[in-house]
Amino acid sequence: MNCLKNSCSVLSRLIRRKAAVCAPPPPPAQAARPRCYNTLRVLRPPPPPPRAKAPARWYHQNTTPRRQDQVVTRPTRNGGGSYRQWSEDDWDRKLTAAVLLSGGTVIAIYFGNLEKAPFTNRSRFIILTTKYERKLGESMFTELKEKLESKILPPDDPQSVRVRRISSEIVQAVHRSLAGTNDDGEGAACGYGDISADLTIKNRDAEAHRGGDEAMANDELRNRVMTARATSLLDGWEVIVVKDNMINAMCGPGGKIVVYTGLLDEFKEDAEVATVLGHEVGHAIARHSAEKATTHLWLLIVKIAIYMSTDMSRRDMRDLSNMFDLFLSLPFSRRMEMEADHIGLMLLAAAGYDPRVAPGVYEKLGKVSGDSVLRNYLSTHPSSKKRSQNLSQEQIMNKALELYKEFSTGQGNEERSPVDSGI
Figure 1: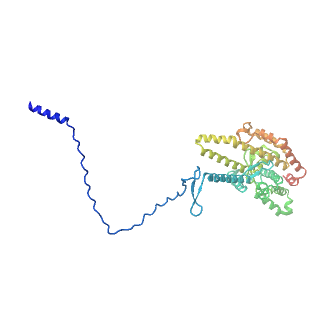
Figure 2 (figure 1 turned 90 degrees about the vertical axis):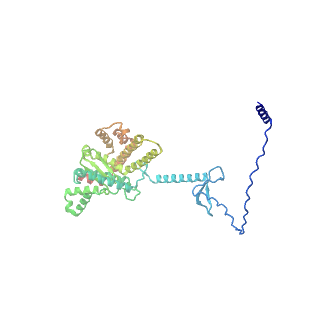
Figure 3 (figure 1 turned 180 degrees about the vertical axis):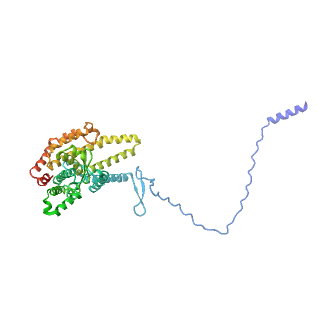
C-alpha cells in the first residue's frame, strides 16, 4: 500500500511540472572547401552574340505592321538585300490588274472573231478558222463517200447531171451576190472557191477542146460541154447523188453537197430542188457548223464549271444537260434553220428561180415528214408551217423578188440560157 501511494504522488508531481523546452541541435559543420590555386591563367575570347533569325523564305508576317492590315514578305529582293513588303492594298491592285488584263483579252478575242452572216447581217462569234472548218468538212465527206460508195450515182447519170446543173446555178448566185465580201483572199464568199473538183467534168471539158470543130458538131458532146461550162464554177465544191429513198440533202463545210434520190423523186421541178439546195448551201456559206461548234464549246465550259463548283450527282448533271438542250441548244439550232431558209430564198431568187415557190416547198416537206407544232419547241428544226410563214413575210419576200427581177432583166441570163437549152 505504501508503495502505491508513493508512486501516485510521484506521478502527480511529474504531470504538474511544465515540459522543458529543448533547444534545437546545432547544424552540422560544413566541410572546408579545398583551396585551388591556378598557377596558369588562360584568357578566352567572349562568345559571339546570337545571330539574328533570318526572315522566312516565302511569306513571313511582320511583327510590326505599319497598319492593321497584314503585311507579308515576298522573296523578291528590292536592292541591297532588303525584302519588299506588300500589304493587302498591293494584292488588291495586282488582282484588279489581272482581272482587267484577262477581261481585255477575252473582249479582244470576242470582237476579233465576230462575223456577219450573209444576207441577214447577224453578228456571231466563231472561234474556228475557215481552213480548219474546210479540213473538217473534207474529212467528214470522205468518210461519207466511203460509207455510201456502192450507192453513189456516176457523174453521167441524168439525175447527177441535173443536180450538178442546179448546184452550179446556186453557187453562181453565191458569187454574184457576195462578191468581195471574203477577207481570206480566196476570191469567194466565206472562203469558197470557184465550184467543182469534179474530175469527170474537167475531163469532159478537156475532151471537148481536143475535139475541135468536128467534136463540137456532135449534139451530145455540145450538151456535155455546155454542162461542163455551167459546172466549172464548182471548183472547191463536190456534188454527189446517192441512190436512196431518203428525202434529204446536205451541204457540209467546204461546199460538199450530197443529194438523195428520194428528194428528186418527191420534187420534180427544178425550182423545188433549188429551194432545198439553196437552204443547204446557206448553211455552208453562213458557217453554221463552225458557229454550232463554238456555241457547244462554251456550253460545255459552263457545264463543267457548274459541276466543279457544286456537289451535283450524275443524275442531276444529266437533268441539267437536258435543260441546257431544251432552253439553249434546240432554240439555237432552230434559229440556224430559219436563217438558212432566209439565205436559201435569196440564193434561189439570185439564181433566177421564182422565190414564191419556196413557202410551198416547206409546206410539202412538212406533209411528207409529218409536221407538228411541238417541233417548234422539242426539235432541231422548226415546224414547216412556221418556216413557210417566215419566208412569206412581206419584207423578206420583197427583197427576194428584187433579186429575181434583177436576174430576169439580164443579169446571169447569158450563163444560164445555154444550159437550159442543152439539158
